[in-house]
Image (cartoon, rainbow, N blue to C red; front, side):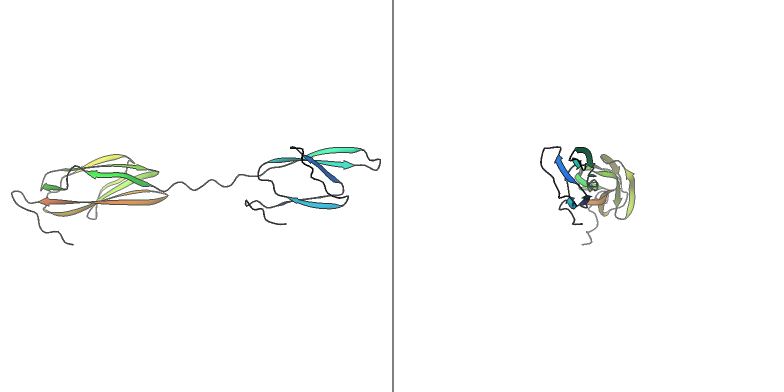
Length: 168
């Protein structure tokens, strides 16, 4: 049997009769001893009209059910917004991060390799108050059917002075 253009397998109908009209009234006939492959794109009822030796017709509805295509995979997670209230603080001060995601099962927030939030809410916020001067990368990763990540850099200055230079 031929494959159908929309992915279903063709359905073979072999009869020793004539296939009558489908539910839409279209003629779907075959010869006395014949076959026809049909490939409906949706559930369709055909009427098999069988004639006996006295040429009396008997109609038999045949419904071909077309299973729907498998559902599409879940959408990939996406970070719509990830921001901080500042990108420069003194050691001991806090920086606030907020995020909004879509299609995520959860999020992880990491500061230069250290886990701050694991399995956090899809939309949320977190305060971090690093005590040491330096430059820190904060990476938010939204996960689910794949992942999406964003990074924000924050400079943490020593009290009363500048921070250490960034290692780029």
